Length: 272
Image 1 (spheres, rainbow, N blue to C red):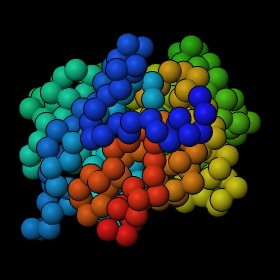
Image 2: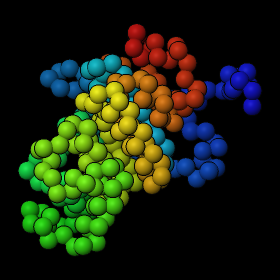
Image 3: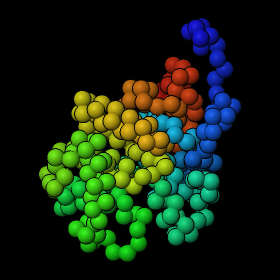
C-alpha cells in the first residue's frame, strides 16, 4: 500500500474497534465507560471512556496533572471512581465484592513508578512475591519455603530481564534501573493477562529508559500479554504502542491507532 493510500485510510474514531480486529479474534480485555473521579471538589477524571484490546499495547499520554495515574488506578479500583463502569475480563467490577475483586486482580500485573518492591528482601524473594497473589494464607514465610518450581520460575524471569546474577542481593542495594527490571520480572511471574504500568521509565536516565521499555514491550508481546502503560515520554508512546489514549484535564481527547496519529491530535492534548 502506498503512502498516499495510507494517508487516505479512514481514521478510527472514539471507541470504534476496526472490523479486522474483531475478525482476528482480538477481544476487549478492559472497557471503561463514563469514568469520573474528584478529589477535594477538583475534577480529576471527567466521563472517560475507552476500550483496551487483547494482546495489544496501549499508551496513555497527556500533560503532567492530566489524571493518568489516577485513571490507571481506577481501572482496577486501587482508587475508587465516583461514577462510571469498569469491565475487566468480561466482568463489571465497580460493584464486585472484595473476594471477586481479589480474584480479578490476580489476572493483572502492576508496575508502578516507585516499583513497590520490598527493600529488605532479596531480588528473588520480591519476584516470587508476584505469584503470591494467586495463593491464600500467610505470605511472610513463603519466600524462604517456596517450592523449587517457584524459584526456578523466578530465576527464569530474572534471567530474561538480565538480573539473575543479583538474585540473592537485597533490593535496597539496587540502582533505579535494576529495581525496575525486578518489578517487570515480578509482574511476569504472576503470569497476567494484562499489565498496567504507570510511567515505567519515568525515573530512569534516557539510555536505561530505552533499554527497559524495549525489554518490557518485547516480553509482553512475546508472552501474549496486553499492556496498558502511561508515559510522559512521547517518543516511547509513539514507538512502542499499537493504540494511543490522550488525556487532558481529566478528559479523553484522543483514542486512536498509533499509525493514524496526526499532529493536530497531539496539539489538542498538549496545547488545548
